[in-house]
Amino acid sequence: MPRTIWSGAISFGLVTVPIHVVSATEDHSIHFHRVHLEDMGRVRNRKICEIEDREVTQGEIGKGYEISPGNVVPVTDQELRDLPLPTARAIEIVAFMPWDEIDPIRIGDGYYLTPDGQVAAKPYKLLRQALARSSRVAVARYAWSGRERLGLLRVRDDAIVLHAMRWPDEIRDPAELLPPPAEVSEEEIDGALALMDTMTRDNLDAPEFRDTYTEAVAELIAAKREHREPAVPAEPAAERGQLVDLMAALNESVAKAKAARGENEDADVHEMPTGKKRPAKKTADKKTGRKPRSA
Image 1 (cartoon, rainbow, N blue to C red):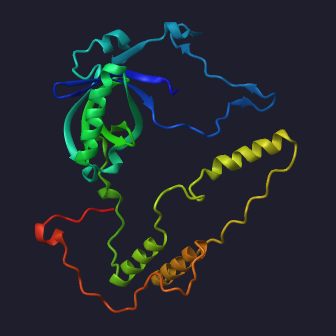
Image 2 (cartoon, rainbow, N blue to C red):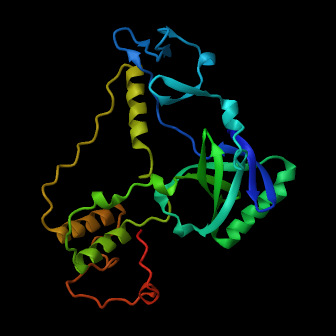
Image 3 (cartoon, rainbow, N blue to C red):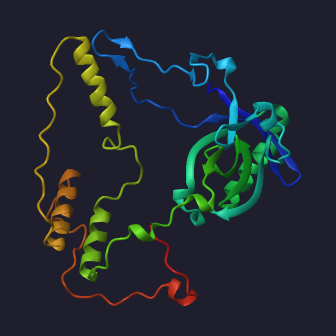
């Protein structure tokens, strides 16, 4: 059973749902210690007070805010817990939105919300079924780990998931990172779409979606433990030169993607552009004046 990270309640209008928060993910990566290579002794961080020049214990350490150089105001954990915030012990739902209106760049780690006892079972199920039937997500505010946060509640199977979200002013404007202007033809766009069709999957359970880096590190450690040579890595692909013919690269990519999936390269599965321009399709976006959403 995952450990409870935070306990409180979901505030949904006048409805309150007592919940526990547990992590929705597991870390299976391999972690290393820092060691002294000469004798393999552990290298640790020591907490030193810069005034007394001595190591201090965890019980002697607290929080402080530096107002000016040398002028630090102490702030205790109890004072932070007692801040007059409605979100101090509650996940307060403030709005509902369509899922596809949320920019994924704002979404962070996910946590499962579990009902706290029998009294929470019915309001928990009510909120879960209402979210599922509405095809919307809830946007909420909550205070956690020393700051107030924005969150997103959605349904996954029979559970409610809380995702941490970034505030609008925490997202950088990408304008300065955009490439210089370049012309892209309709044939090249069609070629890219054909490649995307060939690489489309229904889920992420295929063998190529596995952590090969962790597998390689585990093999390296096993080889060292067994005093044998580790497996020889595959030859890296030859470096490509400067891209000259974009259409040729797209056609080659489609052929390789088909071959990787065991498809007949000559089969008429995806029609590649022939050089003839297709008439532009009229879309609902043109009628409504809305800009098409980017993928």
